[in-house]
Length: 395
Image 1 (tube, rainbow, N blue to C red):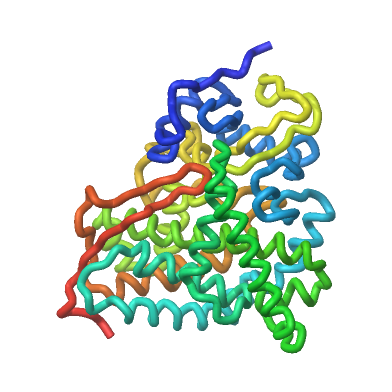
Image 2: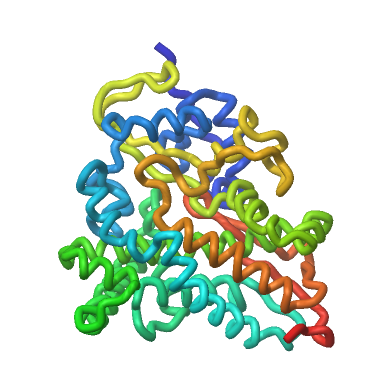
């Protein structure tokens, strides 16, 4: 029987800086590769990940030792079957395509314009702090129904939990910050429950209460929504902006044909996937593409690697909105396909990024070498300095 190969000559810093060369190496080595620095066996090939996702009985989301459970408590992301479906259906009324278009789009459009107005006369900004982070956080507060929580607080909560969810090295300070964030989130939920009970509405928190979810279920799932619901759209916004600014010919085409915004968004999240990896627990002895796995093994499904799998994508490292249509895994697959996908698509590809290019004339990178991208479990630009022509600001 084949043994599981090991990558032992890279550090966590290497993985955070740029995991894609490591992913490509792992894909060449075999279906399952142990990366010592991450203390995890990774599945990196597209077809193998799809095989895992088609068999939730053998490869379970339910794992009491999962970092997401340790940070957030029991939640729908780490449940399968009927239990998962019940909790997912409880929040779905707030996230359906029709609700996203009818209810959230007008509110999010107002937030977009408000944020841009705050900095558009400056002529330069780092879009991470000036635009993408407040945009994602304020949108999340609205959709969740968290009242008047400041965007900076949501951003801090989300980052602390995401760091905790990816803390495979066991850093105690990261764990402390994550615990502080989750305690504060519970307090914020408690503060808003009376309002939503008296005023049923289309927010996620109201939907959870209307579905008679327990306090534990609400706590766990709202924490998960805050973790992913801020970082992922924030990173998608920045990645889409970066991809277009680095490829002015594609940007020109998108401006000429607004229908291309959707293709550009899908390519951006394939190119640099905001969610890079999530775990599964092996429930019984099994072979994955000929590699033996034991009951109790934990594997990481590396969807960022799958989205660069050369057997599915030509020149995967290239941002190309005109590549042949091919399904990607940026939103996951199967029963755990991202519930917030429709809201994210509207926020990023219909509102935030098109409006940014519309309002800021001749938007361009201030210094291409100053752009910073980091992460592997969650990845995106962490600094995106830009400049534009102030004397031509559009109203």
